[in-house]
Length: 227
Image 1 (cartoon, helix red, strand yellow):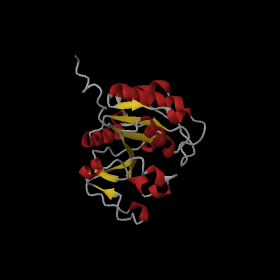
Image 2: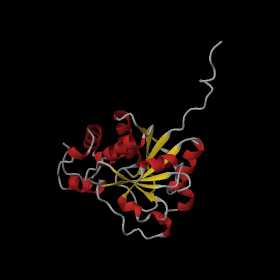
Image 3: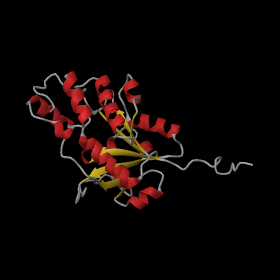
């Protein structure tokens, strides 16, 4: 008789990274820091979620379709990434709580890790339904060596901030992990400004994304090629 004990055993919980943003454009800073976090935290995959109508931003430069295509190119090149377009399909502003709630329902036995930058950390207590959100996932803050968030005095951060990876791995949710990752000192805003000024941005974009931006004239103000 076949041994069914192993096949019927529930699959081990997965560690899923969640990286949301406008990705206007997605660049190597996004890619390298999140892949480094995945290595340190043993992620099975990272979901890249392009936002459609971010509540905190007036709009984007590239269209939703163009940003989706750029993220898809990255996912095709790096196996750990997977495009999740749920927010692009909404007609209302994208709130993190909505996407994370849906993902938790889809992956009830998995641990969810939501990526944010140090610039977003200080505003975290004001996020929409943050108390409910932190019960569904861990937050991962990519930091540089020596980073010390001394300005974080809000009561919300009490007993949540940590740099202890082992502690975070033991808990299902509720931690804000300060994680040192390799970082590229660049932003999407800076890349768009460089394109406007005619400067090369090839060192900041994956080859596929650079070619896509160049061939499709994604940013109307760009004065030169990405090469």
